[in-house]
Length: 287
Image 1 (cartoon, rainbow, N blue to C red):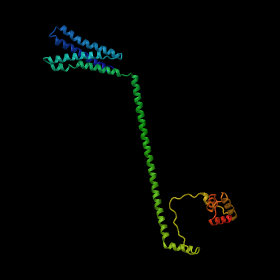
Image 2: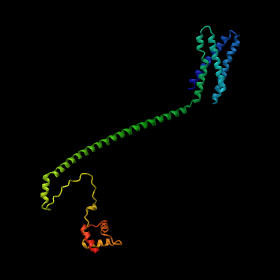
Image 3: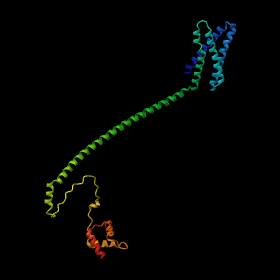
Image 4: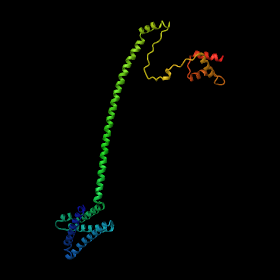
């Protein structure tokens, strides 16, 4: 993996150094002796190569120097400037020389990219751990999606079943209400008819002369359950027992209770007696 970034940087550096040296020798060789031009070209390339080597050493130690980086870019700009100047003063192929004038800057940029890669590079073990974590996260996400889909499908099935059952109950209630309504209407019609009144009168008159009981319709609606204790008739008290109970309740307070108060306590105690019998017993014991 390291060769993918370092090899292009090395190749670009070599090409730019050779090109810079050739341009300096050809350009300055006409004005000064060629050994002098060669020294100038080697000086530019040597300075650039020296700062690059020092930058690589600092990077290997995990360090960085802005001054060395600035010097290296300065040598790169000088080399690019020489190439641009030669291209502008050349009589022929000026465009071709100008097209390759960016090579020193490109070489510095490739070394910058290689340095960034080194600072972010990970070992194979770390990369394998990262891949494992990512795969685990993908597996958990897939399981969570499958669980959500299954729960949604289950909830949809449950709601469909509940809705269907509710619809069936509503239909049954509607049919029942319709039937009860028809029965109630029939009862009301029968109750209000003249023939029914005559029939009831003919039946009840021999029992109670001059009285025609009214036929009440049955109650249609909610009703309360009658407690079992209320269905059991309370034992009828004899007059002597009734007098004793009334006397006991009346004299349980000082002063003795009034008839109304005694009656309330009598009923609250669970005793049962007709109102006229209770009042007669009160008169007997209070006399």
